[in-house]
Length: 246
Image (cartoon, rainbow, N blue to C red):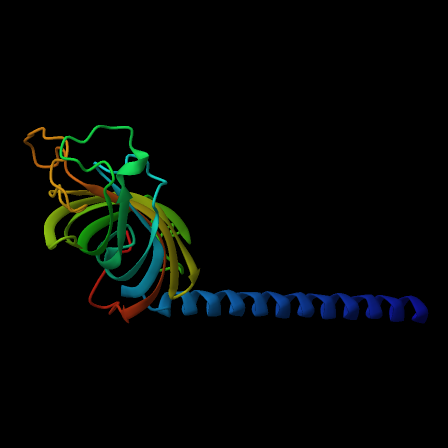
């Protein structure tokens, strides 16, 4: 009888200890979850990002109709102001070179420019509005936020190109890309932009075919730009002053 009583007491004590153990595990898990939630809720949101990019630019016009020909390097500085996780306003300043040649074109040039070559310095300053396909960011502060998202943009800019003399023209940048949040405050983006300009003299020659035309972007020179950029988040947002989480 004593043996049975002792055995029952041992089982009861074992069950009690096991229950206490599970209670402690549950308390630890709840504490960890609470800590992570508190950290995510206090994680700062950022309004701006600044950085730089490197890429390639190519001229498209009277002396080049191939988007992969005469590609030249281009360097950029950029800054973005985020309205919310889906949209931003971006300022881009880029410097590169436009290059072209008539020897690749099987076209007759009435002005005697069959053997024409050029390599002109290019400065591009543009302002554009970006729209993400998905909310972009990390942490609980963005509902449904993703580290990676495709995006599109359109804007307006100014092109300065050093030919026989400096040519200044307006341009319309249109493009898209993919951005990825490498770390909580580091962003990487790969994008492609097509710049429609209002000038036909970025190559140094106006209307080599001798055909007069009208229209804002008709018979004008263009260029496209492929860029990989890296930016860093700045300007933590005041949570008590803003609420754009939805």
